[in-house]
Image 1 (tube, one colour):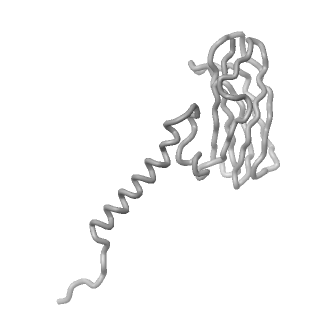
Image 2: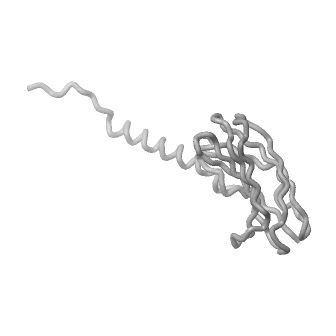
Image 3: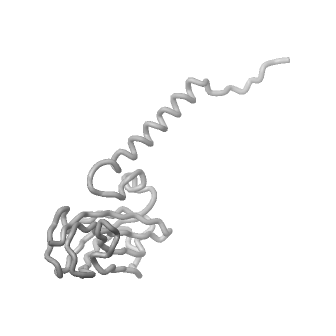
Length: 151
C-alpha cells in the first residue's frame, strides 16, 4: 500500500491563516470603538454591507433652541443606488425629538447629497441623536449619527 498523495496544509499554515483572519476582523471592528458614530463597523468602513452615509450638517454638539427646526445634510452612496433616506432624531431615552422625514422614490443615484429640515416633535430640552439612514436597491441599510442639543 502506498501513502495518500494528496497534500494537506500543515497545521502551522492553518494556524497562520486563522490568526490573520482574526486580526483582520479585529482591525475592521476597531473604528466602531472610536468617535460618536454608533453605526460604524466592518460594513460601514469597507462599504460592503450597505449604503455609506455621512452627515455633513449639523456638526457634532450643535445647539438649537426649543421650537427651532434643524437642517440636516447627508451624503449617501451605494453602488446599487439609494432608494430611501430617512431623517430622524431621538432623545437618549428613545422618544422622538424631531418629526421623521422619509425621502423615497429617488431616481436610484449611485451617490447624492440630500438636505431636509426637521421640525421639533415637542418642547423638550436635552441631547438628541440625529440619525440619517439610507436603504439601497438590494434592501441593505447604512446610517450615520450626530449628537446635537436642544436648549
